[in-house]
Length: 238
Image (cartoon, rainbow, N blue to C red; front, side):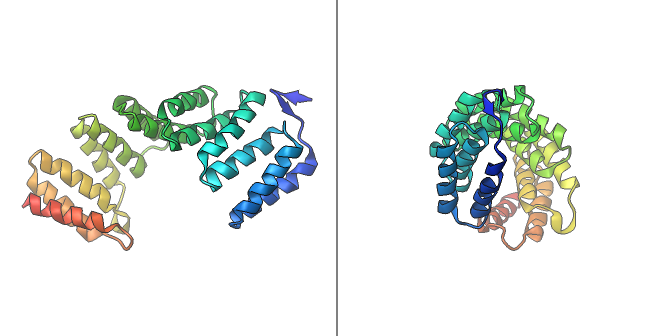
């Protein structure tokens, strides 16, 4: 029997596909791709096999352009395969084809894809790349509805709001994100971003406090450019 263009799954394919995954995770990308292609040649209408070739190329191999034809083959067989449409949209975004990526993510959302959070995040990134800030903000807001209070999501929405000229709302997001952090978990990047906003509106005292706190919160592994930016901000705030 077939469902939405998909053939019934032969149980004997399960172990070879697990081997593909083991090879990928073990760093043996070339062997994984060779095995995946061999399985696809033997089973050209098995959706799951074709998806794994696309994922091996696009995710593990960093070759989104080469992955696209495989995802297209899946969608020709099973147009309603939402996960593949999501993977295809990711590949388009990585290639800078953001208009098509946004369209794809919207189709995935309409299909009721179970990972709504990542769809909103990835579409927001593509919308931002296109300069469509209001739409991007709406997606970051929808992502926050899925994961309320997430500091990283708040930071992304703040950055989007800054680019949209909504700096007061952006500062509110950064403050909310920082309120959820304490001790070693305080993110100096958030403090720098809020310090810059405070300095722009003339709050030198608040800006200095943020830059000082950011310097104190720097961690091993933070980029030297962040240290330089915090020091420069502190000089400007004086």
